[in-house]
Length: 76
Image (cartoon, rainbow, N blue to C red):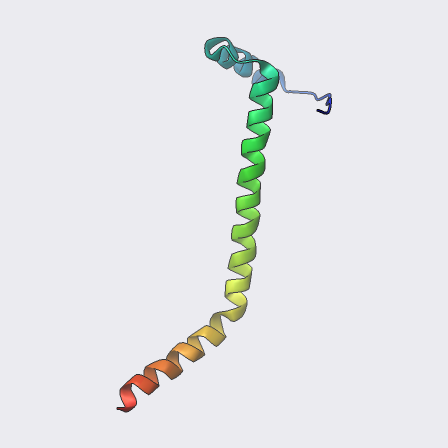
């Protein structure tokens, strides 16, 4: 495990302490879980952004192919 020193805004620290007193959870565990959650969220957002970008890149080609398939269906 790594040791990290960080500065937390007073209001965030106070709110965290109130929550922790009700949860009966160690501060260190709570912060680790919060960072893990935020990391997973950020990874999802990065994947979403990448997929949107890649989807936009192939959008016109996909529409052309779809149009060709539609034309094939109506030839018969």
